[in-house]
Length: 207
Image (tube, one colour):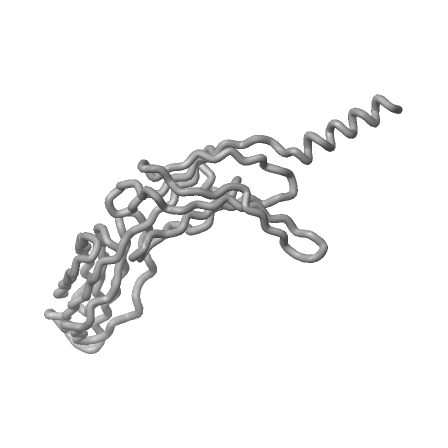
């Protein structure tokens, strides 16, 4: 009985101590591929208690000159672990600002955070081959580091929109897939524009 008690006590102590786990945190610029140095990071854990959710900071610091940090964590059962990197200023894109252990973002213990700075763009879209009110134009976009967005609402008839205000967009190369449905048939095309951080640019589509 005494031996069994010691075994159970030892198992409880090992369980409460948790297992040591080493993780790597990285931050890169999605548009350029360059690392972000000096960004703050935080690893936190949470558990559900009788009086609500309890949070605890397990590790914090700043990313090195390569935009990386290696952190050792004692991962305990019954706790959820999250990793967060504070995004840089002038950010217009982040892939996922908070990532969790054992999620799809946990790639063999490496957590990669992607950010892109802001640029400015406006769209000049003109139906130069209008066949009438039944023309239907749709457009969608994607960046080199993202998936295609959903299609826009239907733009009908002899649509024209030029010279509007510039608006913030993530820097980098952006692709635009557009299609127009007319009585004479369907036309599709892909255009693109590449903008550096802070740059202003115009996308011109004459369809």
